[in-house]
Every structure is written in C-alpha cells, then in structure tokens.
Image 1 (cartoon, rainbow, N blue to C red):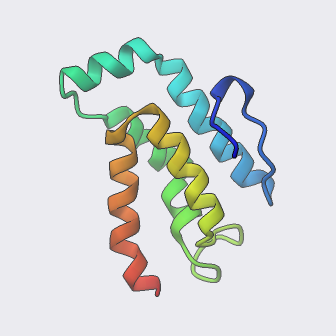
Image 2: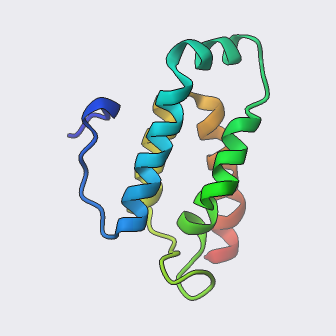
Length: 111
C-alpha cells in the first residue's frame, strides 16, 4: 500500500499531462500551506482559489471526460480519478467534495 506523502510524491503515470496535473495540484496546496488551509476551513471561507486552479488547469475536463469527447489526453480513467481523490482528500474534504459531486453527476451520463 502506498501512502500519500506530498514531499516524496513519485508515482508512475501513463502520460505526462496526468503527472503534471497531479504535481501542479500538490504544488497549489503546498504553496497555500497547512496554516492557511486550516484557517480557511475553520472560517468556512469559500475555496474560490481552488476552483480557479481547477478551471485554469482544466483538471475536471482532463480527468472526467471520456476518450473521444474532449482533448486527445482526456479520458475517464479510474486510476487517475483515484489518484486525484487521494490528493484532494489529503488536503481537505471541501476540496475532495467538489470533485466527488462532479463525479457523481457525470458518472451516470458517461455510463
């Protein structure tokens, strides 16, 4: 079992875009810092910065669009989805929740 450690993140990825997206996501949270993440959580601050990051990096489009419906490297791939789950869940449930609700909404459409 591999446990997530942002300081020693070294996972095999099938493509460079996925690897870069995971690394950029980790970098986003590491730059924000644990103190700020906790402060925002306790103050119930809306996570606009995270949503802007997702939009800029097109994370949901890349990870949640089936092959043939988006960019060539877009695909609904449970390994990538699980990897992103682990990263977001590590940094905070509010970030994971946004992602999970999107999956729950799109899953039935693609199935």
